[in-house]
Length: 106
Image (cartoon, rainbow, N blue to C red; front, side, top):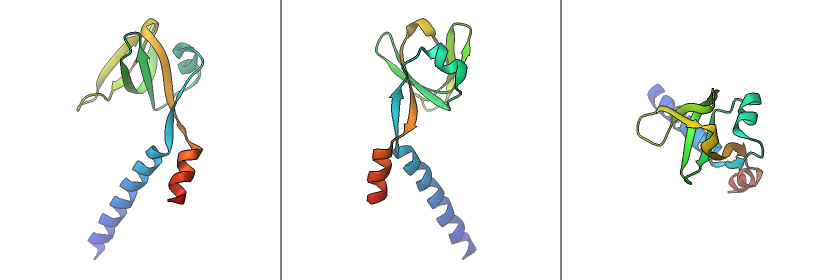
């Protein structure tokens, strides 16, 4: 019986993580990536590059004139670096009160 309690706990934890992610939205930052990352340490950012491609970067940081972190757009995380001059916009996840309210009412 104890084993099924562990399974139920694991399932509940997994569902909680997915529900928390579902209650967020990407929010475009109004300041430059350099300015934003100089004062913040978000767990991940989504960048739009000059060629209109988008990539989510985990653990973003500034290194010289580039944004560097781990790319999540493949099965295996890999180092990803983008020159700041090629970044059109930077977005971070924010809690979305509307999504959270709609989810809570479901």
